[in-house]
Length: 382
Image (tube, rainbow, N blue to C red; front, side):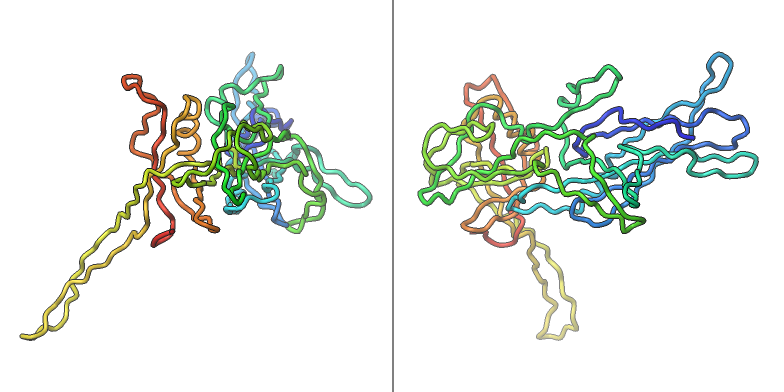
């Protein structure tokens, strides 16, 4: 039977590797083939049923002191959890709490010996072995969340005495600690969105009950799950909100507010200025409409236009070095962005230049990041 399954590298964020090590049954010479199967049961919090994903690999052997022994295999299950999380659609208004992914892992051996196939040999479970309580069958599930770590954060992951690499989840924003400039409108209509701090381990578990595809989760989500908090600036000057240091000023005439999904999977807002430049990269295609011609009737060309989407030039304004780095590596890399137009939030895309200059010491100028926003709607957003 499979001798064990353990988490050897991971975190609660599904955008980075979550790796389990499975130790197979001992070597036997009469087996034609021998492989390990890993099955992941996963579901988005809003789903009643789970989805299953299978991973498999042949068992490797090596020779030790003249005998053959089997070698443990590693499985990264993050792709399965990402497939489940892709069902979730972000909106311009942050939810009360972001949904989590619940999952559990099973592992077992399969082999053929003497022409007979043996399946599901010695099933092992993570995070816990199913239990029977009060006549009902219960499974253990673990939590995971949307988002990913940067390469540098992964390099700094601590390793415990057992060799396990693990990153705990705490701050849900990578904004620098130096004050962020935000705007205050006269009617207090401007809202600042920031992710709350969060602390949860991938090993925290819950129960699920039921049989087959109808199995349902019986406990609710963790109340302190990842969420974005709304703050309305009241007075000008310095203020600390949660772990964020802010400096509130009156709203400039050419200012705009953006909301975006950061690399940790949470929404936060950003206040920027316009460079008073709007462009529309309209594409024109010409086609000739052929028809039966006479002396007085001719074939004519038709011009069709597309890509009626405005592109705006915006600037971060003067920044320090840490904020300039954050703009480039976090904000410009975001995939979902909205810009406020009156009472509407218009979806758009950040369009960086082919090369974005972070620092140029040959020029005596302050840090500033200029970028373009392409509206994701046709026509004027104003």
